Length: 333
Image (cartoon, rainbow, N blue to C red; front, side, top):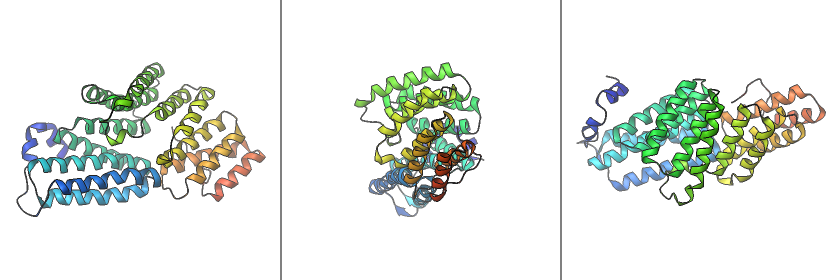
């Protein structure tokens, strides 16, 4: 029987038996769980500083260690639940890492595994994160109905179990999904909700680690994306500038990505000189990172510069080439 069908058929009824301790192997206790949690926390830093391709290898190693403990250890039921929850958390993070590494099929598989684990252990916030990631992937794969359905399901769970930060992130995902389907009015309402929840998040001390990126930066970036989707490039630029300025050094990959997005929109709006400056700054900051999304975005800017064919644009193309960015006809949404 397939694992996913097993979950659908039996669901939470088998939670206790799934987490029953194995009777052979090394004893696994709460201290081991804490060590695993610290390794999972380190993945966030690797992802944000080095990009998805590097983080994917680190995440695979941590996942293997935790799964070895699950299958080969001796532990009590509470520890077993924690281990299974960690497996789900790593799969959820892998979903995002694979997405950044440009491996959409692997990202989808990882998110589905995370969703399975979330339901087995009864972790609603992990389920929210998994559904959010599936919604983003559906947007990239041009599956608007699926994107909206996943974001809506995530929102229903978040309303019952999430704090302001979680709800803000979910609203941003809903805005992205609705915008991808052409429902710009619905997307704007979702953005308004995200801002409302973000304004209430200062007192949210129990927000899960995966919401650490959320804040005014993400609201500004999502608002810019809405304006781009609505064909309002001039209105998008101030929000993109704000997102770039507000994003701190902790999220260096995202800072480079947002700057590349700003360069792309500036180029499309006809502000070639500023676009080139932002693109070169992004490519310089991206040295040492292995992010397929960032590489594609910079390549898109270079391709737009080729079409402009001015002295400034030609200099920009050469500077980007020296920094490892080649022009090709590829565009990210």
